[in-house]
Image (cartoon, rainbow, N blue to C red; front, side, top):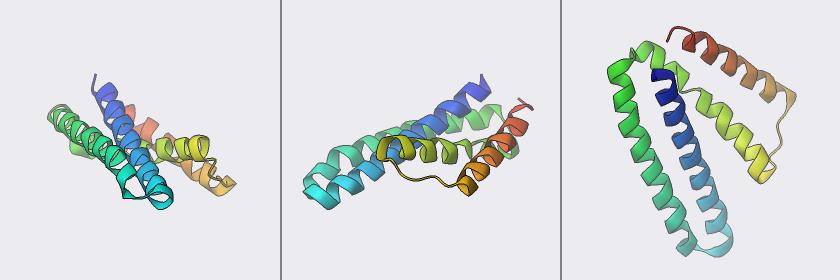
Length: 110
């Protein structure tokens, strides 16, 4: 259950950060009026993630839970590559694999 909640917090945070990137992209091309919806969605998702995170902290020691949020770096990087075709170097892939390995080690304690 705890692992699922941490994964959900990471997913919500990832989507919120992607909304921020989308707002930045639209704002640069079309003006500030298109920013509002993406920013509002981002804030809503971040707020929900924070509430779930508080629940996680009741169940899991912070020394275990917090490092597991680093999976968010992986999710954002992969999503950016898929959505906006951002380039990803071999060094970045190796770093991503290192993060995944670390999260797997931390998660094995739950």
